[in-house]
Image (tube, rainbow, N blue to C red):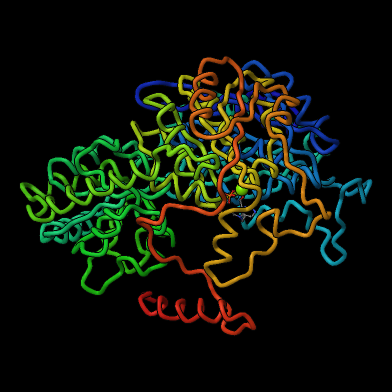
Length: 615
Ligand SMILES: Cc1ncc(C[n+]2csc(CCOP(=O)(O)OP(=O)(O)O)c2C)c(N)n1
Ligand SMILES: [Mg+2]
């Protein structure tokens, strides 16, 4: 067996560069690159190794470990989990900065390879700078924080461990069911140790994402359930996109007249103009989808985790007389909510259902009802998103302006605040891939970094990041990365002077306005200063302007589209209004007792709503 003598870090990057993926007849490198922030925990070992493969596996310098990893995750999502990136940090704070991003990837079932540096395996110089000492357990390091937020975790304490661990890490990243972050903690000394690796380990390897087939008996049961349905509804989740099943689902729905509602991750599976598209479902759902969910006799949930925002905290559609069929690539998700499970790939399973269902169609009255609810909802959207000339526009009106400017080739990116709910209700998708909202972990500060990852994956699309003042102030430094790398973003900052959505939630639960809007926060007598977002963005190298009202915003958006660099537009918005129509109850626990009368009232309403919740 011929061998090659390499350090562990050199072997690691050589292996990564040799991995390829075949998708839709095209073969590309599996890893588009490595986001890296170096420190003593990775610069000498992994850093030196990355330098030598920088053409095959580019290294990209970012500004914060959490947000660079968000960018890597967004890249993978925009590629339908078929291409991905790695992210490497030093030890200690650099590594723990990535933990939040690992959790985000974990919740959203998205692949990212995390390579945090780790303390010396030999322990010879202990305690090293940034090492947290664990008195009772010297095998523990801060990188153990990655365990609960990784689908695969290993600490490489000997160079030869790569031979068995790396293929498992890659397999996890590509597994449609177990997909999520893979973490290889890399002690800084072991990164530099040399070993005679078999040459064959580095042979180019072409991967394909598996399509697990449904079990014939589960399929028969699902067909029987659907074939007896008069009032069926489909809920499309992110799995529809990842299985590349959007067109198949659109065809299935059209021929059988089944209305399709979408989760946050599923939004855009059907273009808004599709006759069966009835919009968003759940807490931030359309009136059309939610009424249909209440009245359906069979719901086919495809590729969704059925989280509380989708199920209205289990009070929207979980009735005893409803049959829920859960088509999901993962057993974990297809068994939730007492569903009839159909575990398998969404594309192939939809095809199998289609064959088995022969001539079955939804009832005429049901199809007409769906059509008329859809038309009613379209009027709500038009009304909510129209400019009425006010000085402090609503989030909905800003969404209207951005949506008009985004057109066919724009993708909107968002994650936290009041915007995701309004976007879910109101954004009109032209094609799959035009809507990218991270609402599994809903992590403030994902927006700009996520936009960067989307733009890297889909350079042909104009990426519109919509971000609140709170999220912007939490994480904005990857704006500088977007400028440095030449990946253009159009960023719209909605400045409502605080955490608008949490302020509304506080009021809805009977709370006093407290610690959310800047006006309600402890501050110097003259109040918190107004942030000049345009000046801030310009300082980071962006083109930027502050505008007032929707008319000015529309003009600025047109300028931003023409520009060839990252362009930030900030405007003041009203923190109070949100679209009242649509939506469903959301379970947010209210104090059972309080000195505030408003809290007691809220609790009474809360207890009543709880009664509708199926347990
Ligand atoms: C990292 C993180 N911390 C806290 C939260 C809870 N949270 C959700 S939205 C929000 C406020 C967001 O403020 P902003 O971005 O200005 O949006 P707005 O609510 O004003 O629309 C907070 C604190 C979160 N989602 N993520
Ligand atoms: Mg805000």
